[in-house]
Image (cartoon, rainbow, N blue to C red; front, top):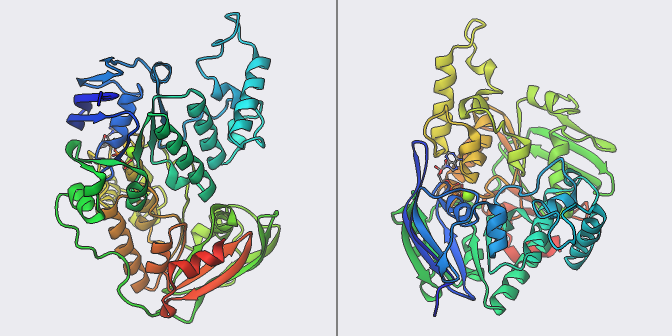
Length: 497
Ligand SMILES: Nc1ncnc2c1ncn2[C@@H]1O[C@H](COP(=O)(O)OP(=O)(O)OP(=O)(O)O)[C@@H](O)[C@H]1O
Ligand SMILES: [Mg+2]
């Protein structure tokens, strides 16, 4: 069969960082190709080169039988390749319709002047076709949730009717509904002999969605497996370059935590999102909170940190302090790792060191002074504990790969010796090897008597790690499971739907 896209011997350097070395890959019509590799292995770099965001340092690409050198993202879109970016691909400060037609405002019109009315009308139609009629074309995109903004991008990509759609780690950030929508688009593209390049750290998803998978490691091409050779152990070993020993979750099946209640939420009501939710977190406990994305669990996590105020009810720390703001929470050494780490918890234009030590000055202050050396040491030690892939701690966070940014967001709270952790989807976008590290770290924190709330959409990690699991459904607690009862995925899911 004639290849649709041929990537030949591509290399890419960012200053001193070699992101890709001599990578080749061929994609055929109707093929869904997975792309997998550890955080920082070069997946986004490769996608961004194909989509015209980055220029390759060396190599060649062929698309539809001719040499392909995209000048920009608009150019690649015009030529037939669309990208759903790993991070938000819509531009804040612009309206929905401006985002929809960015760079193409006059396309299809009779004059070279922008006709806003025509663009708004077209946007409305595109949104409606994609089940997004609740989004208004003239609103600023910032008004919408991460999920809605992603779905605007999806609608834009589909509207361009691409020959190749690249999906970079998008699905794990979406709700069940959003994911299904993307799977449906993939099926449709396949049926029309179009191709998809699909990036995910979720091996089950890769196995279900892809016809074949290409593995990258440290910017090198490792192998491409056809569907009949795809199995999780093989893929993991190819990714990390050695056998994966399979140790992952907690080995024990008992609830082990202290008596002391360290955080208490009483009768929390928030808009129509949370309807009277109460919970108690104990010292040394890992409390899992599960549910669908719109169950209210992400909002609950924000309320526990004081980042949003509930309409009714209160959150109190063990000394009876009411948590009314992130400042009070931080004074009590409460850490919050948000789901949308990029926009909510990192200074993208600062270096790794500053991001990590920003909330730890109390820890490294000596006689009232902060020495650069202590800052540096603390940042290096913490970054090493989560294997942040970086040149050194002076590198800008904005230059890190998606997963490595997330690790820095977690490091920040490890450095300041937090006592209580509110983790919203802590392993989203993190590769299997480092995931195992995070699980070990959680067990270590637990052993030290620290308490953890883990909000998660992944059944296996909720069951694998929690002493106790609370399930939220439509803003209410719909079930509770204890570790010693060894709940099955099926039982847990039943309470969510
Ligand atoms: N703009 C940039 N400037 C400097 N270095 C960069 C830049 N973009 C990426 N890199 C580096 O290139 C390497 C590959 O990063 P890339 O984003 O492609 O990884 P990835 O496989 O997508 O990882 P993840 O799973 O974490 O998203 C990393 O070492 C990263 O730090
Ligand atoms: Mg990436």
